[in-house]
Length: 304
Image 1 (cartoon, one colour):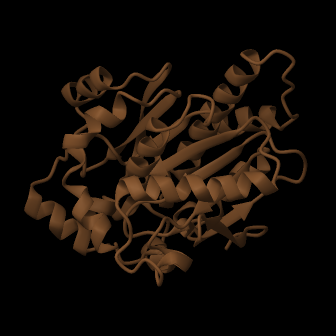
Image 2 (tube, rainbow, N blue to C red):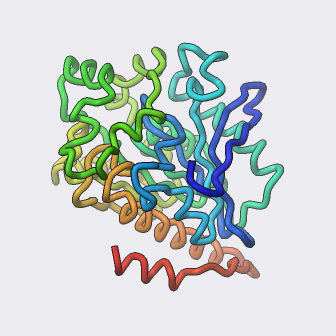
């Protein structure tokens, strides 16, 4: 793990979830809750192939508490949930875990969800069942509505964590990245695997209920999902978020938080978090924003 990152456990209604946590040295601006994709663990957000990859380190340095959760069926809950949970059950379990976490720590302006791939499906489901005030916003990557793959290609990709579908060209990653990522790869639970193919059918109903600001990022070399102009227009038609942002990440594959593009993506995502923090403060009379190194963030973005 990166310096200052520590392992914690969360009580999710009787289910113990493990997580990685890094907190800022002073008051937190907000809590960024990160949900990993299928076949990964929370370590996805603390990439060790290069110091610039860790979302936990960057977020804490910029004043945010970052909590990367091992979703149900991964980490400490894998023994109790050997087949995992469905998408809806995971949303319920994660909500209980967040209630445990926020009851014991200061959250600043509130909780923001940042999620990748299957974790994005859980985050969207969680946001769809929440009151608009429960979350500041949502940033997702590696997820859309329509797959760019056939059923047989999806099955093959889920069975092979080293598939090019997940990674794209090797030049997108630091030397030794695949070896360094061996510790964050985990078997995808069976109930989760069975849920994958149903997503295009359930997406419209979920999307229509998401009532918080939402940012979606597509990697340049994303091969799991359709993200052409027609597909993006379709997404726009289903989503009812009060603020909707589409972004593209050059030089990135599906696993963008583990490649050279990770720092750029994380900075853009954290900038969106700050936008949501500011909007919440403007809508709350008397709210005071925690001080933070925002000029440093701006300079970092220019230099990326």
